[in-house]
Image 1 (cartoon, rainbow, N blue to C red):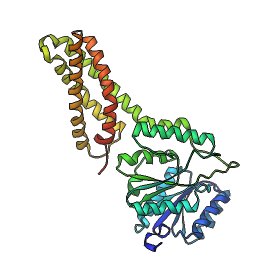
Image 2: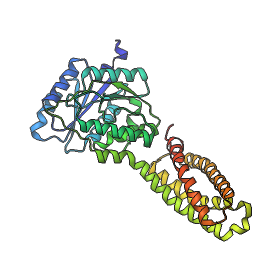
Image 3: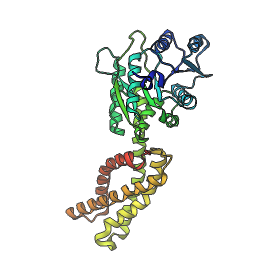
Image 4: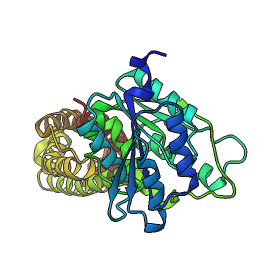
Length: 361
């Protein structure tokens, strides 16, 4: 293994910790013994009884200890580490985030770092096998639940959504520091934002390590599931609001002007309704749902490139079904439109998530 391609010299290990114990010391010593030259440790507001562990680590020339005077959370600890590496070690190829409780074996840390160097522009996630015996049921259930939500809500296929072992190329550190979250939710937000930011990832199988006598989990089934589902929920609320506007305007145009519009009544009613509701829907999706902070004009153009065909498809299907049923009752036509637009909702969500509000460069 050449020096140029060895992650132990060309990456930094980032290790946030709060009130560590002897396991923390063992992790640091094993990293040093295995040749890691850059270990960035964040003391996240530990109390006086635990500060000696950081003093002992700081005595090693390979270690840099950064201190939060008060506890600010694991997410902020990671961001502090990322910022330090980005500003002070620009020659490095990336960082490897680990936990200080011994769950990540040194051989797996090296494997993830090496895979990142091989891939170049993709984040490497150290993924555990949750089908192995002996894993706490709470962790198995939590991971499987969040994995399904990742796939349904974001189209992301990920086998381990709770892994703290991640190798991140240096070019993404500044962008990762802009992702929201200060505590454990930051690690979930990081995964959720990678696809939207156009950052690819690969999985690296790692050994599953649990100490049954000293096991604790920061996973909260309700909170973590909500963090994943809330984007789709906000999209649902935004769509519901615009749908109410859309249906009300559609009904009024059909009621007031339908007789005079003849064969074009469904098309005209749909067009007027969509004009009234679309911009409000775009604004809500852009600012609140997908939190698009750049490329406003591009997102607006793409939105209407989607909106116009969607409107035409809706109008065509409503017209066809009304014709087949020989229907001229406005309220029934409105109900037909509601069913059709509900089906189009899921297609629209996927396209808006993947294309309209994508922040890929």
